[in-house]
Length: 175
Image 1 (cartoon, rainbow, N blue to C red):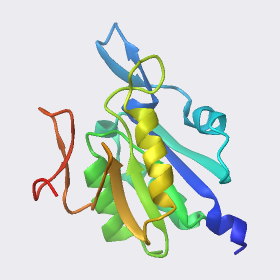
Image 2 (cartoon, rainbow, N blue to C red; image 1 turned 60 degrees about the horizontal axis):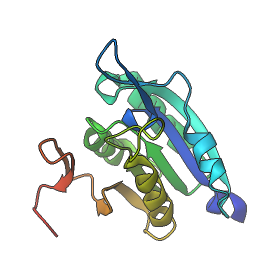
Image 3 (cartoon, one colour; image 1 turned 135 degrees about the vertical axis):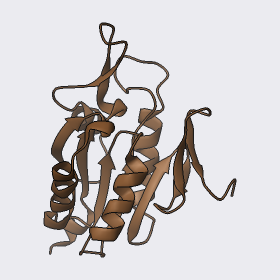
Image 4 (tube, helix red, strand yellow; image 1 turned 45 degrees about the vertical axis):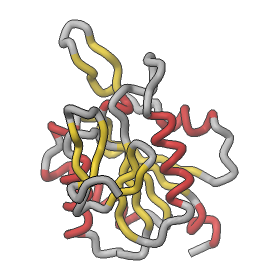
């Protein structure tokens, strides 16, 4: 493996609110047909090389066992050691725990992130911050699986979405 592959940040895209638009006829956010994440990340002119794999474009409540297997496969087949998964917030903790239990290649730093508000068409949105925070953290955290939301790093075992607060929290309380 070349040094470049080790330093490349691989974005694995699965949809979710971060990559959605508001559909007034359904009174909810609906995932875009095609991800806006690559264009957004490329506009940042990062020093790090980035690559993108779109696994699916779904509300995370609609992810199937097949989708989870495809996320796992995308990670296992990636030559990158730094992976950011954009994911819907409803089942993000579940997918993080699924990967922790099933991932064979434990030599990667994998971060899940998303947003409560879509990055496109809404201001302010937590999405750009969560993406930037994840880009910074994927470069400094040791190998493992993490959830980066709301300026905090969580382990798959502790993280939960706290609906009434509109953010992620630890089941162990404030750190």
